[in-house]
Amino acid sequence: MNSSQPIAATSSEPTNGTGTNPPTIAGGQGRPQRKPLSALVDPGWARALAPVEPNIHRMGDFLRAELAQGHRYLPASKNILRAFTIPFDSIKVLIVGQDPYPTPGHPVGLSFCVDPAVSPIPGSLRNIYTELSSDLGLPTPSNGDLTPWTRRGVMLLNRCLTVRVGKPASHRNKGWEEITDAAIRALNDRRDQEGKVRPLVAILWGRQAQSLEPLLTNAAIIKSPHPSPLSARYGFFGSRPFSKANQALEAMGAQPVDWSLT
Image (cartoon, rainbow, N blue to C red; front, side, top):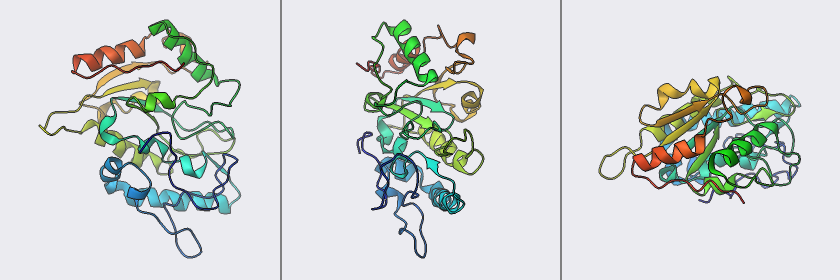
């Protein structure tokens, strides 16, 4: 399944980029019928996440309760599980974010990525682009769309997959962390047909992402301060994560990532 294609949603899915219908991962009387995980994500991810599929359905119930209390959420329902539409065995690089942008129209279900029409580009992403240009000499992209990276084996995963509109961090400690931790463990534990660990580089920006390092025992770890405008000058700039990721992949016998976006 191509990463640019959103997950299935209800027939009444809104088009304004806000969650006004939960994804069809939860149901019940008078609600959309629950779809199996295999109908929502890449088949490899469906198998990897099978142990936490009940947790995913519970998060659908949680989002329904949010709506019942008048709280809209982001991203749009069809994009909540978008990170898991990237083929499981194709992933070479993991970049972990915290939670979606809380501004309507911005989050698209991939960490740090925004809709191409968003202007200005959010500060953290502008700083990522500054470092990308400095590190690899690439032109600065004109918009915030990172989906080309996902087609080249880069997974852009937020630790929490939803947020209330205008309320950063509002869905932390509600249940998403157990699901995304399971996903990270599954990536770490992948094996090829010969039983060898599949190459994986984890780029961990900031303390929250770096707290996941114990789950990534088989991955090469690249870490630095977060690219936020509040912290980028304390070690993110000049950290060269993109060239380091490619060096690590080549050392593992894998092809480097084409990081260009223009």
